[in-house]
Length: 254
Image 1: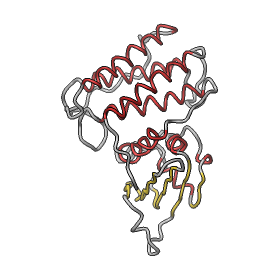
Image 2 (image 1 turned 60 degrees about the horizontal axis):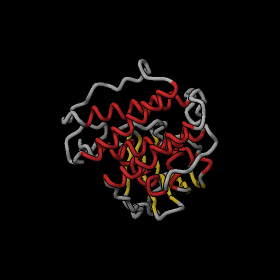
Image 3 (image 1 turned 45 degrees about the vertical axis):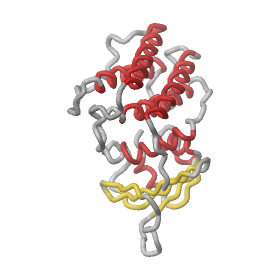
Image 4 (image 1 turned 90 degrees about the vertical axis):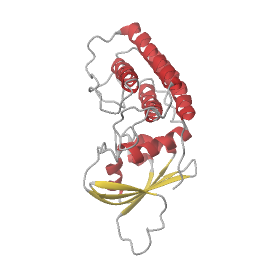
């Protein structure tokens, strides 16, 4: 497996691109338009969700400590409607980008993953949060564009090195076997061994020899389709799948 080594500049660059694309999508339709990829949500609810995430992250990273903050408020009470909601979202987005740009990634900051509690976690998380919800917003206007390839590759990595090890998967458990993901539009592939309640991200397939009889599945598609399928935005049928397709459900996080 080869990894994409992201950086603060890479993730902030993606955030600066995906944010305006999200705004452009929600500008094209009434805010009460349903979002097909997020059942029971409208564009307004998507705007409220993303803006509130930005506000909560800003509060979290400026605390300067690694203990868990108060839970993010999920109800929309007090959030603006109509054009004011878009202005509010824009203010939250601009403030987030400015803040993350000015912070040292090595500063202490809480995160929910089993990794270093540093500010550097959040530019990556916010880039992917915004990219996937940009895609969601575009499903409401029938003008969907894929996730940019390098960003999607890193997003797959985030699912495997962050979401699943943190216990945030939504697939059935326990599962046993090996999943091989192949991004057809770039030289990236991932091997994941499912071990009941746990999983291991493998660097190579060298141990998967003829003496290993674990059930296996190979899923091939563009990096964007792979990522969106892991998030449950598209079905695994958009991929080329051989082997036990049921194993793929264990990698879902959205």
